[in-house]
Image (cartoon, rainbow, N blue to C red):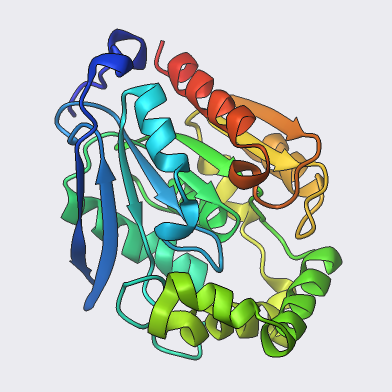
Length: 277
């Protein structure tokens, strides 16, 4: 296993931030990616896993600011059916996050040549990170940063997701999402929305993966999260085998990196420095 280059040994202000884009072929699909900063042989890689309606572009400039502040390499990608990636097959399996965490993500890491990584997951992306870390023996994973993750279904989540369906069909939400997803916009929305609102999805639960996770974990959630309560973080923190740091942000909803970008960035960078010190 390649040694991790400590973040504190890197002068982040002095590095030129390399940038590359393209597609990785994974499981018969072309997945859009953005790479920022050092390559995997030169530094730790932060792998960004987007939310249920996210993609590379919807992270906005947060990955770039994290890359500059941490000195780490950053890999951001869009899952199939999102952004500029190939469309996904619909309807999605109700185990679509299991499929992503157990099969697609390890293949993506292989395709990208990732050697040592911290998974940075938001919402669905956080759940996918947990499934991977607890369900795959992968020594490349050195830590987890989870923003608004979910490990079980709450009534609040279903109410907000049902409301998003009303907004998608009755407001300009579809047009705004189309700016980021292009022709994938309906695939992205209905693939996510139909799965979460399927009657059988109420029993979805990934807590069985938590005890197998021993790497350091940072949990970030807004106190005003409209898609989940603090019960999610409590369940995760109480069942993980490794050290856990929890950050609750005021004046923050479901997207800490958008609602409180500076505090989210600082928490992430501090965490990376601590867990590799």
